Amino acid sequence: MLGKFFKKPRNENDGRVPPGQYLTNGFPVMTYGRTPKIEREDWRLKVHGLAQEKEFTWEQFMALPMNNFTIDFHCVTRWSKLDVQWTGVKVTDFLNEIQIDPKAQHVMAHCYGGYTTNIPLNDFARPENFFAYLQAGEPLAQDHGGPLRLVIPHLYAWKSAKWLSGLEFLETEKLGFWELNGYHRRGEPFAEERYSN
Ligand SMILES: Nc1nc2c(c(=O)[nH]1)N[C@H]1C(S)=C(S)[C@@H](COP(=O)(O)O)O[C@H]1N2
Ligand SMILES: [Mo]
Image (spheres, rainbow, N blue to C red):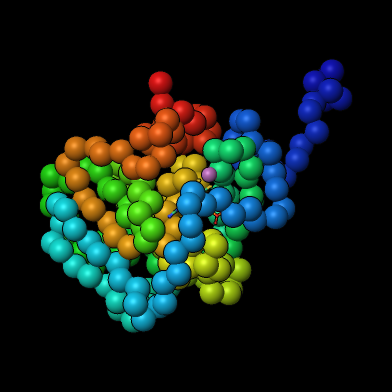
């Protein structure tokens, strides 16, 4: 009976905000270093490492199946933004276009400007992950990673590589930029995998 009256008020965001995060309505820009400027006609995405080498031009990439996505985005500096809308290509659809060596177990995302971030292949090859070129229906702003970025909704946003330029497949894990500088190798927000031990 008491429980009925003293229940914590239900809120539509219950269960969506990871521990230690607060909500923002804005869309902060989080970039280490300078912001690269890449024209679509100069842009390339290279697949290398333990995969058959392949390079995609903008035109080739845009010919892949497109989908809309609405996801929650969690930065390790403690802001979360719910229901961010994007358009782009599912990672699982992209993986159908390339040949990965069965020994590959990790992915390193490479970016124009030199940023890198590592992702276990199991976390990368999920149906909810995507490459975004539109945000809320508009071409992805340069600050937010245009022309194309990766989005990995179930990991902290530092894994969502902006200005994506390459995907390197690896057998053993290598660490990316923030992972070498103290961030967790995986970075799952609900487990608060913020820092490496
Ligand atoms: N290339 C590149 N990608 C990056 C970063 C960066 O500095 N360089 N910052 C990461 C971090 S820490 C976050 S929180 C998100 C922020 O994306 P936003 O600037 O679109 O909000 O991008 C991630 N991807
Ligand atoms: Mo971040």
